[in-house]
Length: 157
Image (cartoon, rainbow, N blue to C red; front, side, top):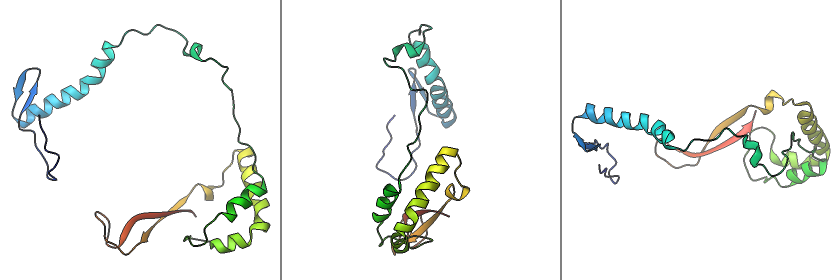
């Protein structure tokens, strides 16, 4: 079976050789392809050697940790992230320049909100929802409306 991948139009299989038999009508070809792909997984699984009934954890050389936790962040880390924001990037909501100007006043509060959120296991709904905004880049691309580039801004709303 040879399919020419250089063409962009649909390619139909006109002849299928399966188990030394030739199939030429579309229904038989579809049936044989379906039969093959439905059975390939179970047939391969049957060929695998039997697995002894052993505990898979015996292969672990060290004792696994039973839990993990996030470490708290400090206001200085939040401040460093805020200082790294590019003011030339577009945003929806509070302009980045204002966030940078308020850095000294909001870093401690943001760190506290983050730390409390994780320690209590509660994430505010507003942080779970994002708004996707297509950005008009002045170009025309395939499969998208005119003047919309496949570049999107994800922001929390």
